[in-house]
Structures are given as structure tokens and as C-alpha cells.
Image (cartoon, rainbow, N blue to C red; front, side, top):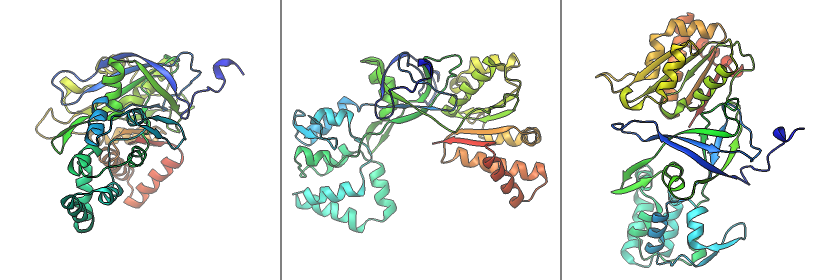
Length: 386
């Protein structure tokens, strides 16, 4: 076994300290989104990846938020705490690197109720826990981070270790890889929407996306990473046609797919459906897609920019417009891929796929559903949704 193909010493439990070597904004000024392209250097790690895999990133929390939490709870930050691994670290380090400061739960409120000493706070917490409808309580929690809760109920006080027990472990974030290992064996490209929004009159930051965009990029460009291998990927048969539906950052793996098929001169045809808000601002990797399409390396390219016209148009609408040709590709053995938002887009695309197969294939709903099930079983319908 060569060193190149030996298993890497680095994994989820032992991430590689990779260097962030490039960061550039993909969405243009005027966009409502901040979508960025990152290049992570994995040279010397022994890590290998394939198209369809994801990169796991271990972020750290925003130091400003950590300071606010410490101040709200009257901690200095140098108090020693014992982690579940039995490692002893200062509380500030634990809050920075080990626990999630977002998403308090009902259990958090129950613990605060037990620790609160002010009568009015106990009463408010009691009402929240006993008298609030489940959907109202869920909305209350969804709009708050731990800091909000601590500021609302300041009489609750904890020992450093009891305080740390309030939080869940900070988990790594997985990002679909946007590069082909054939072209980039020693680096990994990511396509990341940087999350910034407001709830409960406070600014919120997506932990991993702002870690990459702000903290890692500005201070220390070292990012702890590991490769998460996936069943989502290109067919072994390079002559197979592929259809890729990836709006927004869902386009990431399909950039990798297309790079690889071009590099390997795969005879199979490739068809991309991409969508976002506005073409002028949100056409991610526009130059690449247009060049590949112009040169015939990408057989078909269909775009859906929802806000460029009065009536919103999405990728599933473009699929319906090309229903006959889409069915011809699928009937001919093409593999159908979807990547991106699971809550709405993936469901809408799935409904459109069922509808196209039913109408174009002359099937009833049950027969179309069975056809789609068979596609999934044969790995001709693959999804990477989140």
C-alpha cells in the first residue's frame, strides 16, 4: 500500500489542522446573501476525498459572545472546569471551543427554574413551562440563544461545572465539497452561505460559517477538519448521463462532479439546474458554468432566478418546462441528483419529478411512485439535502 493510499491518521476524533488559503465572495454587492468560496489546504494530512463527500469543520464560538455570556453570569473566565473527557480547562476556553451557545431547550428552562431565586423570574419560568402551548414554547426557544435566557433570568447562579453542564457539545459542521480530487488532490473547495440574522432584537451569527468567513480568515487561518465520506457520488460508468439539481449552495457538489467529468473526459452528458434569487448578484460560479456550457462540456444548463420577474420561478419550474427531455434522459438511464435545502426545495423537486414521470411516462401516481422507488434502489436518484 502506498503512502498516498494509506489511511490518514486524521479523522472526526482527530481533525487535521488545515490552512485556509483562499476566501472570496461569490455573491456580488447588491445580493441579499453573503455566499463565499473557501479553499482549505490538506497537503500532508493523508486525507483523501471523492466527489460527493463532505468536509467536516470544527468551529469556535464568537469570542465577543463568550465574553457576554461570562459577564451575564458573573464569571471571570479563568475558573477551571472538568469536561466529560475528564480534561480540566478554563471556563472561557470551554465556552469558546467545546460547547454550543445556541439552541437552549425546555430542559434549560427547567434547570433555570430550579436555580432562579427571584420570585418574579420563578413565576415567569413556571408559566412558560406549565401554561405555554408547545408551539409557543418552541417559538420562544427558537428566537433565543443561551445569552438571552441568562439576561432574562439573572437571579439564576451556578457553579462553573454546573453552568457548563447546561450546554450541549459543539458539533462539527459538514459542507459539501465543491472540488474534484482529480484536479485538486491537496485542497478542498467549499461553497458557504455566511449566516447572519436577527431574532429577539439581537444579531445572530452562524457558528461555522462566520468562523470561516470572519474569525479563521482574519486571525489564525487554521481550520480543524476531517473528511466525511458519502454514498452520494458519481457513477462508475462514465458514459452515464447525469442530471444535477442544486440551487444556492446546493451547487457545490455539482461543481465537483462537472470538474471531474471534464478532467476525465467522461462521454456521458451532464445537465445542471441552478437557481437563486437574482442573476446579476447570485449566479454562483457563473463564469465556469457559462464557459463549460459554451464549450459543450456541459450539455445543458437551466437557470431559475426567482426574483428576476414578477412571478417567482424555481428549479422545479424549469424541470417542468423541460419535462419531455428530462423524461427522455431518465428513461435512458440518467442519474438524477439533488443537493440543498431539505425543508422546501428538495420536497418541491421530488414532487415535480413524480409529476414528470407520471405525465411523460403515461403512468398513474402509484406507478410513478414505484418508478421513483426503483430509481432510488438502483442509486439513480440520489439526494444530499440538509
